[in-house]
Amino acid sequence: MKAKVPQLNPCYNVFTGPDSALNRLDPTLHSPTSLVELCDPSINPYPRSIRAFAKVMGETATGSLKLCPTMEWFKEAERFGWFFGVDEVVIVSSGNAGVNAAILALRFGLKRARVFMPSTAALEKQQLVAFYGGTVVIVYEEPGHTARDAARIYVAQHPGCLLYDQYADPRNWLGHYNHTITQIWQQLAILGLSDPDAILIPAGTTGCLMAAKEFCRKHGLDTTIIAVLAEEGEQIFAVRPESRLGAEHIGFTTWHVDVQKIKVKSCDARCDTVALARSEGIGCGMSGGATITALRHVIHSIMEPEESCGLVLPHKNSPAPYLVVAVLGDNIDAYLGSFEELLSTSLSPAL
Image (tube, rainbow, N blue to C red; front, side):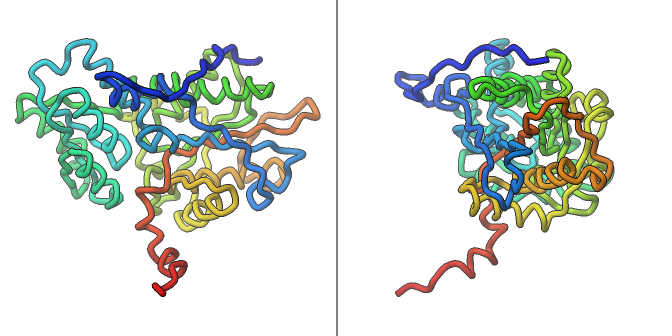
């Protein structure tokens, strides 16, 4: 069954007037982020059998897909008067949502965003929050004392604060539903392509996974949704291991049971972050690299089904190529420090 989605409206990305700075940040007023076919044989060596696309969410105005749900929340908060008597928004984030909250808090007339970040958060993300006017609170997490716990305690003790709990707020997946996921189907329709056979999404706060699950349910689609996870004990920015996904994540009990999962090592994610940049010119964050690693696994499973390692994809009843979409969550800008060794060997001394 083919999903019925509204056509894309042309946008020219020109913003004027007193609200121009805020409008520039609003994804609903922008052209959609790119959907790019990955044609380099180093990533997809079987273009006749598989068409692989990347949804490049690092092209949003703030460089990550988290702009979509965060903007949705801020607009709703303003619409319903939640900011009355509020000086600061408090949010728990390992990076992208916190950066977006720091940017949007000032645009919506608040004094600041206070971002509670686990100590494992990328240093560059901490710096970006501070650069855009936010206050960073680093939390050394342990059982019974998480960044989320610390944020709740802070809000309870400080009047004038409003908690944006992205883990439990339905706008976390509605923002992705209205933008990230719907755009993919709109752009495929422009190309005259059918619904994707599989879509790969990194598992962070899981809102995008929930959005994909709900979109497919609403439209009666059999697209295979694949959650990209970090292997246990591995550190991949914005990608969680399965043990760190729980009922506090919005829609967890809904999407977790039915989606398929691919677990990725951090070394592979790093390699594929670089490989994508050099083969396709797309600079994505580590979560995008992990998604490309998972895409390689999907391509191998399609071509060598006896070696699929438990991954089950829908059977094709037509000669048309498999259609696979990989969601790349953010851009590389805030992660370059993680590639210091690579960069140091590539820079020539001054002449």
